[in-house]
Image 1: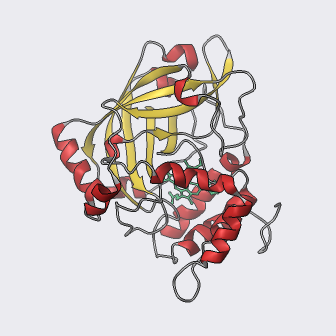
Image 2: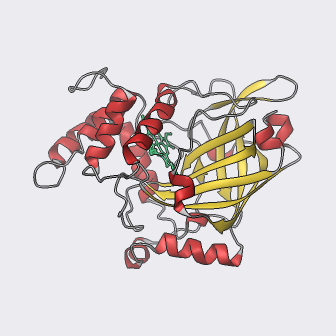
Image 3: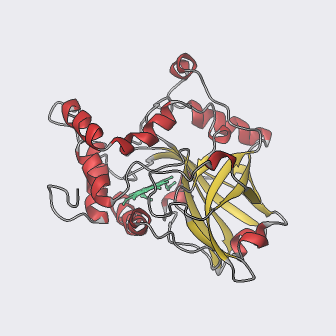
Length: 307
Ligand code: HEM
């Protein structure tokens, strides 16, 4: 598949499709529309410098962050089991800021932009407000890798924004002070471990339970994440965000530092700009895959449309 039936695949056409899937709600993010802005601090580990010379990761800083629920519907229920949860954060200081925009699945649903657009177009609702399930099934059968993200998420409904592991998904080239470069994947793991709900438990929760629980947790000062770098091995795939590295869950990880979320921030603070995937301080390079390359432009287009 190289092109969508509707023409050239661009970041703008993906934003249009993301919005169409959600029914074009006004002034909302095209993706991860529901969320809560928060703030906190980052404390580097002594090992961070072995992996990256990025001052964002080797020095302490304040953190601006946003927890979110996937999809373009700002009123989506926190119990929705088929969309990811997001964790975007900005760390570092003037001149060396970095934005990492992560989700609670280690893989993305599309390998290429054309596949991403086709995935979304198959899900655009018809006049009855529902997607054509025949179309969705046919697309899934022809593109089975596009279901890996959803299957992963559906099996692990999180009990808390602070109790689920988030991934940066792409392979990022990291350069240390010795000028040695290797690929890493970011894994953002809750210090207390993942807490998941059973299916019936998830169904019994309220539509805003993740947001309500977040406020309670912040009040008790109990939100900490380890920022981990998973280290590459020769031959790891670095161009396909739909596949994990072999034995990824058991491979060597270096703790770059710890994020502590200390307060709720008015949503306006996060809504005025974007967490920009291309904003990476020297020492962490841009991933090489085409999905990553489209992200910054798409986020900027979405920002214009939601103002
Ligand atoms: C590994 C792949 C991806 C991940 C993990 C991811 C995750 C996220 C997250 C967590 C947000 C919420 C940002 C916030 O909190 O403000 C977001 C927003 C968004 N994403 Fe992605 N995304 C991915 C790929 C893409 C791609 C390829 C596109 C389009 C080409 C895209 C389009 C968008 C748009 C338009 C927004 C809304 C931006 C805004 O209005 O600020 N995403 N994404």
